[in-house]
Length: 109
Image 1 (cartoon, rainbow, N blue to C red):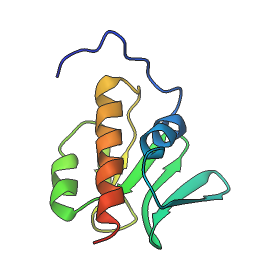
Image 2: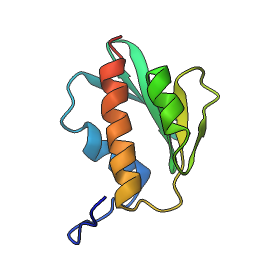
Image 3: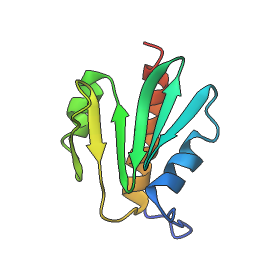
Image 4: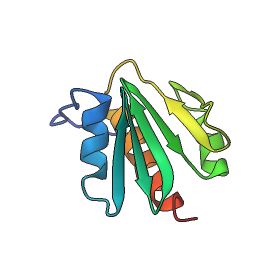
């Protein structure tokens, strides 16, 4: 990947999610205590709790995602991954944004 000298990281995982879903249609948000659940067409596709993002991906994409840094299987079930990077650098933001877009599209499957 090419370094972007103009990159300004989001201040938090919540800000990354806000920016990533700002152009996506049909996203409903529900906040319960400290977690925000993102839903499309009645299907949950992501959740943010503090600095942790969990997304529901196609199982093959989830398997590949689990081979990248700062990811783990989520307790939410098959296809869900947990992403908790210690720093929201360019690479973490790229992955989180891509996974959110995929999860949003996959919500209609």
